[in-house]
Length: 113
Ligand SMILES: [Zn+2]
Image (cartoon, rainbow, N blue to C red):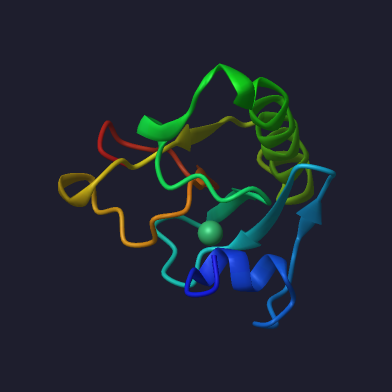
């Protein structure tokens, strides 16, 4: 989608440091981190929210979670533990309507992050 920030990052129209990537997804650091490690794992495919995930997205989701594991290794939180989270909609604070998986870690996380 032409007006989607993450689609434009994927297309290379907006330069951004990709800390990991695979066939299905790429990962960047959150510009407003909520924890010492806060990365976003973003599918190359435009899917607006987790509500829009269907059965045909199985391979993409496997690629997304696989890359999240790689991000945890690259960012040094693989052994200590980390959180994976999807925000869905306004009340969850979702601001970019292109599916993205948050990888949070680097300290003890409370129940709300
Ligand atoms: Zn998009």
